[in-house]
Length: 537
Image 1 (cartoon, rainbow, N blue to C red):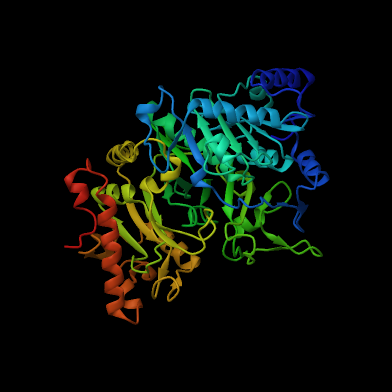
Image 2: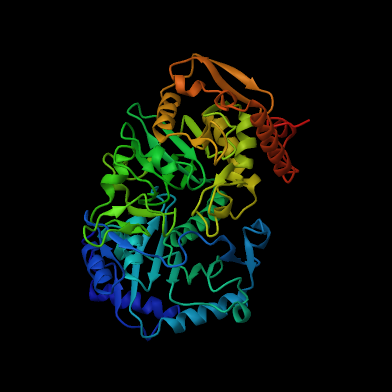
């Protein structure tokens, strides 16, 4: 929906609600502007340029990825006992939050502001009304396209349950404000607010709200998941867990299947549902032949972040990583032909864990037992890829519980128990798919071609590995297809791709040891789950 230009009554109501938050004395209030008008304003305000295909191309400044060290949750009595406090969920005192909020309110005085009302959650039974307030027109465009868009009737009754206020032009003082840097993304469950300060990276706005849902949904018996999802012609739903850069968006945007969503979903008693109404796709090295659905979506109404654009032809250079490798494109899910609208699906029959192994020792695909699935879900092994977070310039092996620890405020075992319940109840099969390196580690081998991974995933979803012979890997405790079946590329054994077999053995033992060391922190994990993981002794 793009025609819901607000009435004077609607503007007056919203202005009053903003004043209740302390936001007053600002410049023009732009509420729920149509897409074309937001693009026009962004161009008039020199916030970006149009590509040859019509997309709005913008730069986000020094923050070209999430800034995890600048993320905070306000420590209040209502949430204190339920948050997994630590390096990921860093506490902020309520008084410091209030002081920063007052700075933000003062910063907005005299400035034009843009307001979008939207929903999170495609399932009407679970959705949450939200409001996004920004100082930049292009960020408002992003919010209009990425979140779920209300109808005119829904807009009239819309009252936000959570509000994001994004002011990338405001810089904090660590000495004065008690923050780690000039930036902060602070979530306050008591005030039902998110303050997004100093960073223009649009992903912070949506990921902060996803973190809110990831905290709230388990209390309702809903399993929140950092995963993409699609559905085949046979109606069978599949979900893909994985951190940024592992291929969630690319593999779920399959021309042979219908896209449900590319980032985060909930799994309720009714089935699965998308959190958002758009896609936020990585587009480094984007090629039409490899990712036609994403390529064709970069048109008028989409936002492209940090991609170099030829000033004469206005053609984006997707291979140029001068600004960052974490180049991004945001657009509505209905830009994908045949996308499922609304973004809901049946209970999944196939669950795929995606990992990008920079060691080059994990197989292209392996089948997991129930206990193995629990182990790898809690481990969340992958390699952080260049540009995904600030400071990452080459792949770094990491373990991120639930394949999304930065977005999961509760203890990992809360989400793992919800996964186990779903697997037991609905009988889904779980596979581990490596989208990382073979033929050697990063710097020696090469990354598995996306076309090869896509064929493997299609084989898994089409049950073409049912007739394969599986070999149990005693080191990693994985069942790896090695003979038969109808997908020869899935039968690759990583050790055989290395010229130096002894070097492979060393690398494999090293990675197995990292798994073992990481899993020691899950002291309450059942014995059968611990034993389903790698062993070094």
